[in-house]
Length: 172
Image (cartoon, rainbow, N blue to C red; front, side, top):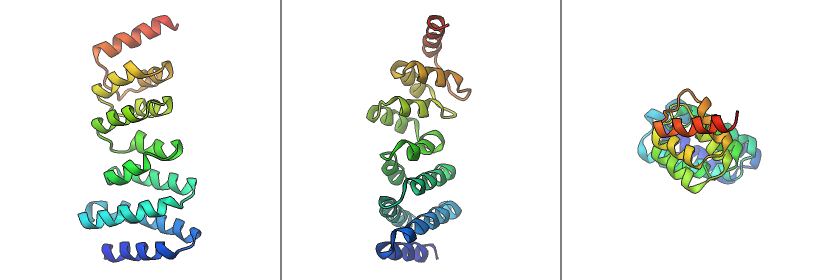
């Protein structure tokens, strides 16, 4: 049934006008949210392909809503998340702040995108581990460090505590 529904959405997406494509994107997100643990690997590939195609013509609001759905699911396909991480801040934010990104993926993201906004989103993630927080401390601006210091779920190394202490002493 899921494969038939995915194929129907794929077929409709090819010829659908823009307003219908937005409905299909929402349906696709809802389908994945309801059944993400039950979708076979080959169907996940189909889901990703259809989603990327629909996202290409989606409005900012539609992409934001889809990103929120994926972030709330937690187990979104990596290829789709990687595609969406190239979008604008409002789309990327829920994926970085709430999505299930590995610590390694966060490190790669910091390598690829050193903008303060990206570092701020990572600093605000709950349960951020030491290699990531150490990198934020070494590369981040004062705003990033303040966000990190405010994050009760962030694990900080002794070196990170020292750097934050120095920052606090220098900026009373």
